Amino acid sequence: ATYTDSAYSSTDSITIASAGINIEYLLIAGGGASGSGYAGGGGSGGLLYHSGYSASSGSYNVVIGAGGSGISSNGNNSTAFGATAIGGAGGSRYGSPSGNSGGSGGGAGSCNGCPGYAGGSGTQGNSGGATGYGNNGGASTAYGGNSGTTAGGGGGGAGNTGGGASSYYGGAGGNGLNNWSSWASATSTGDGGYYAGGGSGSSYGHGSWNNVAGGLGGGGNGGDGSSSEAGQANTGGGGGGESKNGGSGILIIRYSGGTAASGGTIYSSGGYTYHKFNSSGTFTVS
Image 1 (tube, helix red, strand yellow):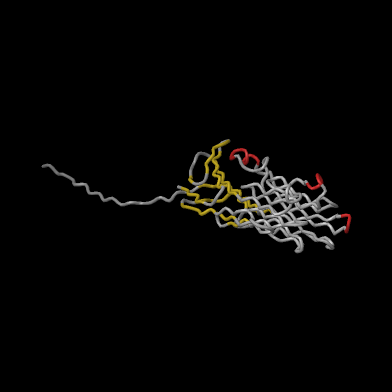
Image 2: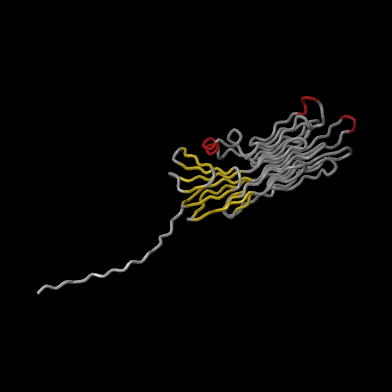
């Protein structure tokens, strides 16, 4: 006799969730604008660095803050991965000289008859598990009568406090940080390897004495209205001197190996993949 076994099978589906990827990221807010008159420089945008964020499968919204636009206005916050980088403080203007507070503090302004004022507070702390960097703005000089010794303080940077004004010279913008210079090289970003420098303060008006270098990391040069400079775009640099905008922020993401996500502009360098966001968008892990 012949016996035949009938085999029956059923099919079901299972979904295996992606393990995701481990990333590092650098997130910077927009820098503050400088003031007007004997003005303070704008503070840099707050800077956040996370050394090991576990990004599971899915999409993540990215918001890149614009620099402060208009006299003494703060920069806008940048957000990603549950963390918030705080916009840099606007530099103080003539007649309202106390320093403003922000990711890094704005430089203090001065005025006729003013005694000199302290710079604003840098308020960037840790956020969303990321380490925060921000510093205070610099002080202004007291009014010197007919001698004209009146100038604004420099905006704070991610690496240093803004410089205090001295005689006719505005305070120098605080330097940013170059801890991520290899990232800057890989993505063609930053300012000589630095990010988040403060803008320099306004000087009184004595020719070449006006010109004070901004903080390394995109901070605008100080001076009077004609020689002042805006903060550099996508560095979080503060505006320098008088009536100059702050620079916009940025997000850079890095992980080991080949491309495992989408979003932003993608680079490959030194065994790492980088995603650069100069503007708001979405980072998606497969």
